[in-house]
Image (cartoon, rainbow over the protein chains, first blue to last red):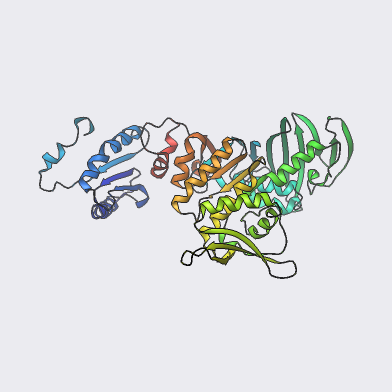
Length: 96
Length: 373
């Protein structure tokens, strides 16, 4: 797999998702130094709520930089009992 | 206070100039030259203090690898006595003789000479800038270091005193600190391994010792006082008394080296700023937050920042810690970087932050240096 130069920020619900994403991205050619994970800390807060709350600020940060440097933003969220379309509907139109 | 630093042909510094403010936080990747500034200041300090000859302090291994010039240039500007001192030194390497020599050494006050040394000719000037004497001088040591204080050279003496006593360059390492002290030390060493000897000197000033003790009582849980015990004819051992929590107020004594690295670091950091306050000191500290617990970093930093704001201390700090970065980077941060292993470049960190992320986050993601482009 060719080396990817982009830096990827991954917003995810828990450690399990983080580990899964890390292995997947490694296979896709991302070096561990090029990955940064924003993971919900262990506690009472639900992972889904953490991702939903942090999503707008991460999108804003990504948009402020995307024209200057090679970066990606990946967001992982469980559909849980909802469908994928229903889950997408929680994301505001301007932030998709 | 330090106003400007210029370095050329030393390690990764080529034609490098930096204007120094009252608080300066150096940020940047590993190997970007942050600690190099402190190293340079320490070398100039050693040279002016006469701690060694030019070959003991400067080395041919420290020339910029991709440059061919055998001459290194260093300049510092220091504000004081109602004007600005400029100290310049050029160090030359002679490969045939494998010898380091002083090419020139000059000290100016408000652009007028106090001392000039060039090609073996030394000219001394009085405080009114009239030439006092002119003679041949060796090229292997500092002329500034050898001139004794006199009635006609008070400016030169002030500058030497600033460089020897008021410029403090530190890379504190609590693992090297010992309890024993053979004699009093007027100045802390770079790693502070002589803390016991330095505190022995400070404790001669009762007022200062009481102020330090009272402040440490508020900072270190259970701290009571310092105590020196005899450990030989001149040797003393520094102990620290704590209250024993389980048995009321009975003090428990520990040798200084028995404390944890973090406790020693905390004691040293607060002792340092309460000792040097109001003395017009320039503190240069490489990663002062090392060994400190997270809740301890910001209070110390805020104390230091307030003292700097009041003009009591000037601080040059290098750090990678997010708390330091977020606390100080926007008013006082400088980003050091090197493109493709080239020379050091430095940029001031501005408030043009559209991302909404804290500066430490931008640094962690490698996004900061795009802030200024």
